[in-house]
Amino acid sequence: MEILKGTVCKRISLLIVLLGTLMSSQGQDIQFSQFYVAQTYVNPAFVGGHHHGRATLHSRIQWPKLQAKYYTYMVTADEYFKLKRMGAGIYILHDVQGGGIVKSTKVAGQYSYEFNISKEWVVRAGLEIGLTSQFADLDNLVFLDQIDDRGDVSGGNGLNGTNQKLYPDISTGGLIYSHQFWFGASFHHINSPNKSHIGETSTLPMKSTFITGYKFFLKKEASYVRNASSWKEYSITPTAHFKMQGSSKQFDLGVYTRLDHIIFGGWYRGIPLYNEENNPFKNHESIVLLGGMTYKGIFFNYSYDIHLSSLTRSGTGGAHELSLTFVSHPRHHNKSTKGRRRLPCPKYISN
Image (tube, rainbow, N blue to C red; front, side, top):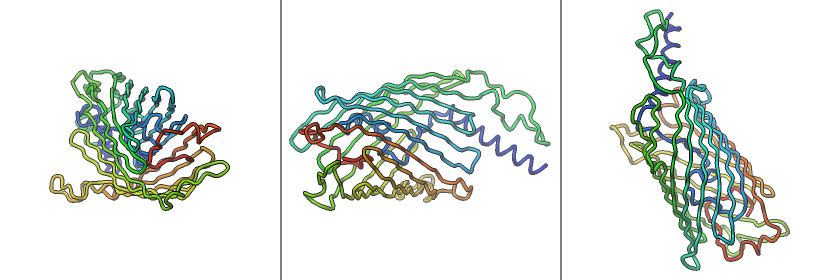
C-alpha cells in the first residue's frame, strides 16, 4: 500500500507541477543547449545571417529517466535575399511535457534586414510573428484532495476550462557584429499573450536575451584558406549568453573550438555569483558538452547536459540534443559573398 501511495503521489506531484506551469505567470520558454544551431529561435535578427539558404532539424530530450520528461522538436528554414538585403524564415516548434499532459505547437514567420554602418560593422534587425496552440489535458489532472487513505482517486478536479488554447506571439531582436565580435539582444512575447486555460489572466512574461562572443583565429590571414571545394577555419570562440524571464535568470558561459570540419566545446550554465533565497547552489544548473562535424554543407551536432543542481540526486538522465543542418552553397561562392561580412559567431556549416 505504501508503494502504491508513493507512486500515486509522484504522479500527482507531476500533474500539479504541470498545471502550475499552465496557470502561473512565471512560465519559462523552451531552451536549447545548442542555441547557435537554433539561433533564429533565439533571435530573429539571425534570419538569413549565413547569406545562403538553410534548413535545420532539431530535437531535445530532457530528463529521460523521469516521468516528467520533456520532448522538443523543431524544424527551421531561412533564406537571404541579396538585392533587398533581407532575410526571411519560418520555424515550427513542438513540445511535449509529462507524457502528453501538456503539448504545444508554435509556427512563426520571421524577417530581418541588414545594413552596413561602416566598413567594419554590420547591423541586423529582426521581427517574428507567431501563433501557438497549446493543449492541456485538464480532464485527467488529479489533486491531492481527490485521493483517499488507500490511494484511490474519486470525484472530479473541479476545473472548468478549455483543453485547447490558441494565442499570438510577437518577438523582435537586433544584432551588431564585425569580423570577430558580435553582440545581440532579443525580446520575446512583447505582446504578453494570455495562456490561461481556465478563463483567468495568466500572461506569458517577456523574455530578454543577450548574446555575445569573440572569435580568435588560430591562423591569421590563413584562417580562411580557399581550396577546390570549401573554406577552412581554425578558431577558438568564447561566448556568453544571458537571459531573464519573469523571476528567472540564466547565464551560459562557454567556448567553441573549430578545426576545419570539426567543432567541439563546452558550457557552464548557471549564475555562480547570484545567491537566490540564501541557496548558493540554486543557480548551478549544468555542464554542457558538445561536438559535431560538417561535410559539404551538411552538419551533424550532438550535445549532452550534465546536471549540477539538486535534480542530480533524482537520476534525471541529463538531456540529449541532436541537430542536423543543411545549407545551400552557390557555385561562385567568392562572388556571391562579395561585400557582405560573415557573422563570426560559431557556424555549424562549411564556410
